[in-house]
Image (cartoon, rainbow, N blue to C red; front, side, top):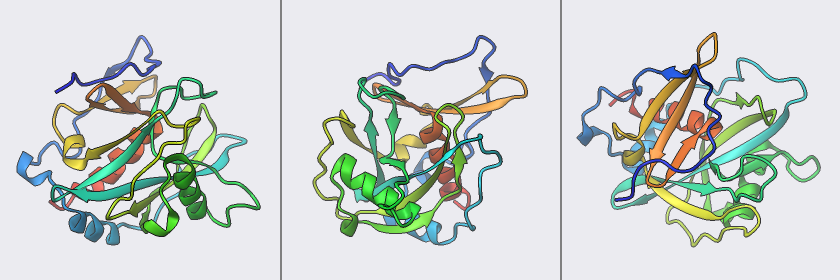
Length: 223
């Protein structure tokens, strides 16, 4: 297996400190393997989505899709890697998604589905949207991002957009839930919790990691 962690640019401040454990750290390994049916059931029990606790002036609405499918009897998520040629977030791991286009997208849900089709060739008709997650705000890019969970099972053949995606990869949720995958750091004062998932050759952080932590915490809360 490849070493965990990638070459993503992490603007870690000098005073960064170790954070807390994962919300699922108490679970034994055999309870961290979730079927797609279990995920669907827990998505149905999600509370109403909440707005972000803060919003940067001039923030733009955006949406991402959290695509799920089943392989080997367990739920997997689809992630993408951005090319180094992008104007921002070069080389970062992300969900398919982007900004709301007035006149094109009637809703944020429509924006998430449109972006998923454009970026990875996932047809909207192949996706069943089963949940809307809490909206979160970003500071650097000034987006307010609404994530939607979509089930695509069976998963059709995916094709990366050559200008927006250099890699599509599929990750079992159980891998994200492993003890050596997640860690948290505190940045700044007052403490700002920054989440990381260390995957083989890649590091997931930023807004994508924030979405994953909240989603996985809900999925594992009642296990």
